[in-house]
Amino acid sequence: MNQVAQFCIVCRLFHNAITPAEIHHIKSGDRRMGHLFSLGLCYAHHRGGTDSGPFISRHPYKFRFEQAYGTEIELLEKLEQFINEA
Image (cartoon, rainbow, N blue to C red; front, side):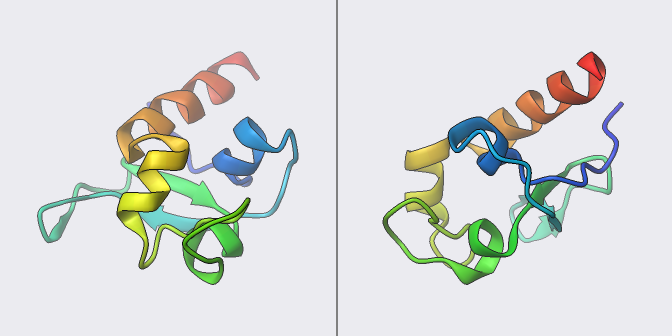
């Protein structure tokens, strides 16, 4: 079962850093999949970054974000691994 992480999973995986997170809800089509399908993303990786460089934002650059870091479901699986190991 997923718990909402208090850190950015992208920063943890790709920058070896622990940064505060905002909640990003994973969608299927135009609908949220539910609260258990949520990622912790820092401001830069969620909505405040760019379409290139170390801080590619999920919004509005989903395609570039997933090219760089993996799909949202893949990141969710990594997040669950971190939580289960804690």
